[in-house]
Length: 197
Image 1: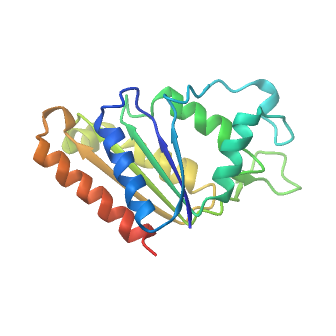
Image 2 (image 1 turned 60 degrees about the horizontal axis):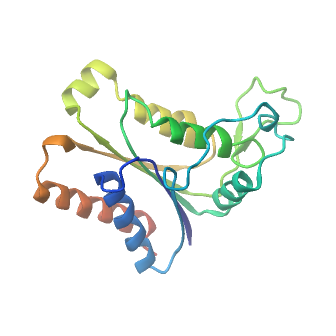
Image 3 (image 1 turned 180 degrees about the vertical axis):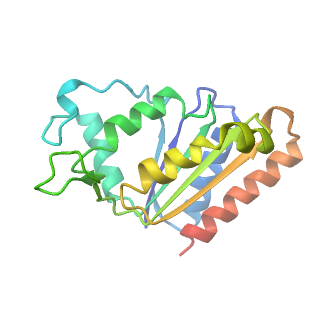
């Protein structure tokens, strides 16, 4: 099995990075092939160029590599903080540039792009781990959990990924070392349940 891990946090000492490392080591226990991308350390350029937007548009070799790995992956794991109810800008740019037509989705031949795309991703499962400093009550009652909608419905649902799992760990800023270790164990169990073959 091949799994892509994408982590987006500027601080390598962050709990997000700890989650990503635990995910990677767990997948490697099963001898899965792992593509691990730390977007900040890789200096991923989030700015899409006009010429990249169409399906027939050209992309830089580094973007083509991301696209090829994504297309090859049987599973996808995304790790990022909740910033203003959204992923960090660098990860949004990754979505813009890598979740592209001809790779992740396409429209039928008689559709000029206004319809519902057909998902093309090979991945059967996508797991998203988030961290937050907002309580669950406030998140649900005031904001309505926008990250769930973005990843489940607006991205992976449209790209053909049928099994979607998301876990938000909170409140990180006041958490203890014991709580964070329990969360890492929970993340590990989610990975084992969904990718342990």
